[in-house]
Each structure stands twice: as C-alpha cells, then as structure tokens.
Image (cartoon, rainbow, N blue to C red; front, side, top):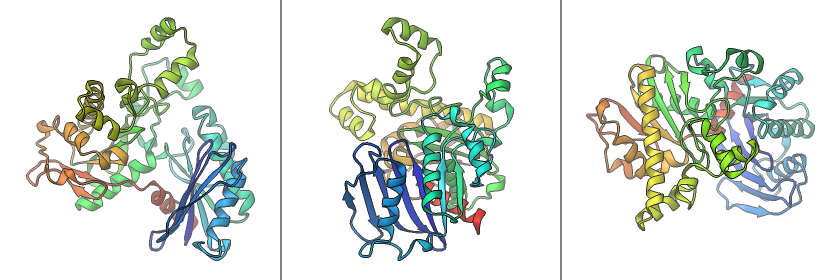
Length: 396
C-alpha cells in the first residue's frame, strides 16, 4: 500500500509518499510560500532534489503540483494516481475529542473544526489541506493523525491546571501536550531497540528540536508531558520561553507598552535560546558562538540543558523510576554537547555517559555505559512513518 503523508502549515506543506509494505520513502518534498510566490521541492528516492517556483496561490494548487510531480513521466515515483491508496494527514489539535487517529469523515472534520480555537494557527491550515486532498483525490481513504492524541491518556492530576475549575468546564483549559506522534513512535521504538516489554516499562522521551517537549510514558501510555494548552509551556525552546512566572506578562506589557498580542509575540517568537543568546535559535550557531567566547551563547545552551534535566528529574518522580531515556528530534539526535550537559545532571540515577558513543548523530545508539542502571539512547524520530502506520492500520 502506498500512503501519501501530508503535513500542512499556514503557508507550507510537507509531504512523503511511503510504501507501507517496505516502509520505503518513494518520494518526498516541501511546498513553501503558498499564497505568496510558491516554491516546490521534490525528490524521488535515489535522485537529486528538484526545486521549482510554480505559482501556488492556495493549498489546492500546491497539492495539485505535488500530485503532478509524483506521476511525472521522467522523475515520478508512481505511474498513476490510482497507486496512492490512502492519505494520512497530520492534525495538530484534537482536544479531548480524539484519543487516537481517526478516518476522515464530514462528522470528524466538524469535530476538528470545533478545536480550531485551541490551535488557531495550525488546525485551520490542516483542514485546508484535507479539503484540498478530498477535492483532488475523491474516493481515496484519508486518516487524521493528531499531535495531541497520544497524551490523552494523562490522568486528571497531570492535565488539570491550578485555575478555577469552571475554565476547564467551559473552555476545556487543560494540559494537552504536542509532538504526540513523535513521542508515541520513539517510546515504542526504544522499547523494541532495547528489547524491553513496552507494557511493563518506564520511558522518558526528550523530543528536542526548535520546538521541544518531554513525556513520561508508563507501560506504553503517556502519563505526563511538558507542553500544555499550547506548545508554549515547558522547556526553553528555540524562540519560545517555556515555563515563566505568569506575572512577567503584566510586567513586560507595562514596561514595553505592549498589548496581549505583543506580549505573546515576545514569548513565542523572540524568547528561548534566541532571546537569551541574542544570536540564533540554531544550536550550531550557539556552539560556534560559545567556542568563540560568546558568554550569552554559552548561557543559552546551559539554560536549555538545565531545563531539560529538571523535567527529566520530575518525570522520574512521576514514573517512580525510569528504565530508559530517549533523545530525539533535531537537537536530541544531533547535538552531543547538549546530551552531555543533560546527562551530567543524571548521575544520581546511576547513569554514566559513553563519551565515544555520544559523538554520534542521527542513528539508533545507546550512549550510556554498559554498567549504567538506566539505558540512555539516541532514537531518531520519524513522524511521517508513524502517520503512515496509523493510516494503514485504519484503512486496510
């Protein structure tokens, strides 16, 4: 079965065509600047990337360009669109309505639309992509895979905030968590990689990228996660502040003469390691700066690593122990310095770092020493494959 995986943003669209039998990526790419001037990147497996700038005023044109590329006579991955057997869509927020992936129907889309105010930047874009695919590929079964679904197993004690309960009753203000597709994939994969029984396990997943979150997974189910009602809560991130004293919002607003939108823009887009360092949200830039004596770049890396270590410690308590810790996503997989700094705080767990193994990047690998009481590993995430697997499970 060939599954087309679609991940729609407000002005972009990532895609992969995956053969679910072999789990091979047949083609992949990206549409950017939708609604502006358009840029299409397409790459068939084994060939170089092709970049073009066709007009794509809406997501419908962008998806049509993707479909045309997939069946191109010279570089297409398939001969005919009938070879696309199903489409899997990433949907950011399912609220409390979706605890698992779901086949896309009119009723299902109406329920997703009711969650739009919980993710106003992402859900509407996800829905636009779904509706465009339905129009261009009538009759092809489609599945929605939710970033929030994996975290719906959290108990009440983990998801309730210390706010008036009526805000939960009226507006569903609670912790939802994000990156769920990645946390689900990585927690299952590290258990398999280490030969553990996922149904009798305590796993912490550190998904560390420009957006970053940590989850505590007990017996294969999420019991806590660091992101909240929105992706702003939790770790210090690329440009997001993570946890702060809420009164800071009022303080900044008065000092800088900002309204609530202005304050939220600061917290979401001007904070995190970029805000601390004054240089960049990219850890490669931060390491270069640190190595050249930039104290703020060094401070940004230290703050980030310290916050990660604190959350891991909190989730060891939540799980009452831990069997394995997984580092994943862009920073988790590719920043040995960050992993080293985080693990330097975990000696109390009987963890020691294998310094030679930790030099590696982007592959399944244990980076704790053989005598460590807790296994620590790099586990590359693969959200597109996870979406494809979820899609096949529902439509086959």
